[in-house]
Length: 216
Image 1 (cartoon, one colour):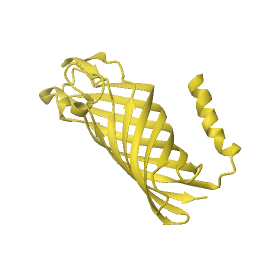
Image 2 (image 1 turned 90 degrees about the vertical axis):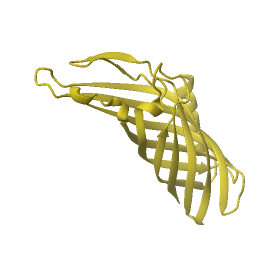
Image 3 (image 1 turned 180 degrees about the vertical axis):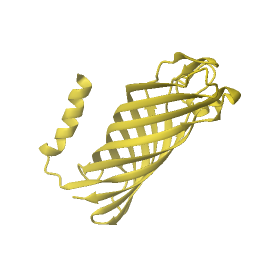
Image 4 (image 1 turned 30 degrees about the vertical axis):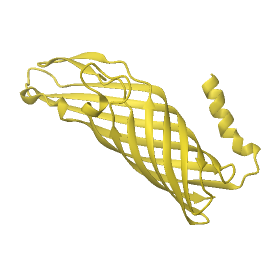
């Protein structure tokens, strides 16, 4: 309840201010899984997942020249790594999808056309982890397992804005997503045996992002 109250409060702040600088736009990113945080006994997220692509919609409200509040709605997709190869038993297709619903605040170290900044985002992450087993043996059926969970998380950011014009900003930043870890679950795959879904526990990652913001 406190978390939802804080989200509502931050969303209503612009309505209570006479600040005029509002920007909205989109971004693209490339993510790198990490083994940072609580990990599995054998593998971490970096071992089980490939790099991913993300796309999102972002907005910023400049409270003044040094501070801004914003929001981030983005989607990310990652394939599983070669660790999931089960050789002659069949194939396992693993994917990791992440939906981010984040609010953020940033501090700008300059008011020039080039504006380096540091920020922090927080909010909810919807994690969809899928494991599809495609059997090569007609006597054993193919099966699919999907985990869907909401998890809280935070994301520190370091980047810079470039003022392309009075109404267009280029936004480039490095972001680390730190998400509450998932609990592993053991599933049975015919003709293969037990396999552990979400064995990596932590699903933390680093991403490089570039976007454009347009003044309203």
